Length: 254
Length: 224
Image (cartoon, rainbow over all chains, first blue to last red; front, side):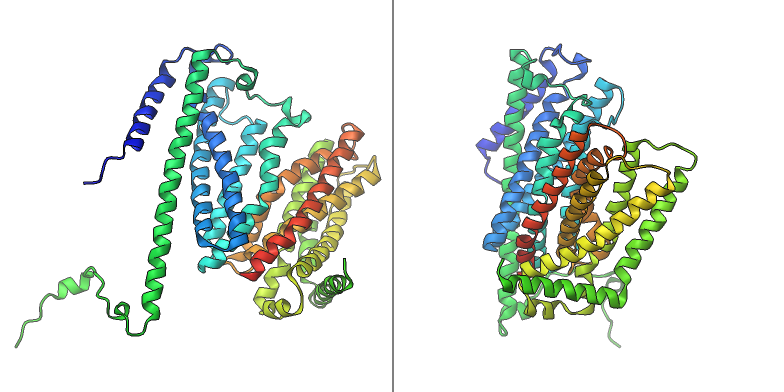
């Protein structure tokens, strides 16, 4: 039986407590529809976490291009996967928020739209990875693309929603920055941000570990295959019996 | 820039021009695509008055797709013809990138001016500020050339590369479209002139940044 990890168990308990707190915190009056605004406890932390992991992807990709060490590619892919999951959650919770606060599922709000475009980078990154069979080319080309996205990424996340002509049309509430939350709401909000961030870091580290193990396994297979007299050529691999084999059955003599 | 750099860049540019003159495939495809797109847009807008913002948006959407279709060819063709290795031996990666980007810029400028003037002619619109319009097109085409050339280089050895080049380039070009529409609507008759020039400066900045970062990323891909 696997050993109980105290840290992860504690994190799971804290997330459960945090989830209950998101339902029990008193309403924030600054929203248009306060009782249906609790989505913000999940929406904003996911958006921030996704952005941080996207920036981390670019950094890991840059390190890969500089060093050509495969573990940076594993880190970049893991970070991009976490960014994708949290990004989808951001969009999904944003759509629900939009419906119950502003009346429409999709309002072409500048922040909503720019985040959708950011997710297109993530989609393109994975499409590019899928198009290469050679792991070295896959790693270097996707790293180059990831670094190329940094300028539009920063523009879409930090500049575009704040452009004077665009910011005026935004429906996004600015209650967090302007301090529109009371103390209990703020406490739950920041706690959720920390907990979601920690959960994503745990998931990221697990994904990196799995990726590095895959790399080590591939390397050992390659090493075995390169030895002419190695056991790899004589290795008996477990195989499943195909349907015709089973139907054939044992041959009877005579 | 040292003379050897200049020689290499000019050599790559001339090579691209010569092969384009021989085949005429790039200009023909982007020219025909622009013509068909503009006619389709003009037919869709038949008997309707287009606002400057909408006209600017339509022009840029047509330019985005024209660039995504024609510009990645610069690298895809090398891969298809099997001349990538010869190119690798004859010039440095930065020179190759700039040479091909320059060629793509020329091609995009020809396409851009042809497409936009044809659109304005067919939809009966007039230009208020010709210099601003020209600067917008120049900056926008520079950014398009740099971005799509880089995406073409990234996907050159990938499976399904022709479709992938466009899929990769378009998300990178969307921020450009915001700037471009913001800037181009001014010479078409809407908004403050300073907003137009600010947008044009943004376009040029985006183009310069792409053309500056591109060679380094291309060199990293090229060496693998």
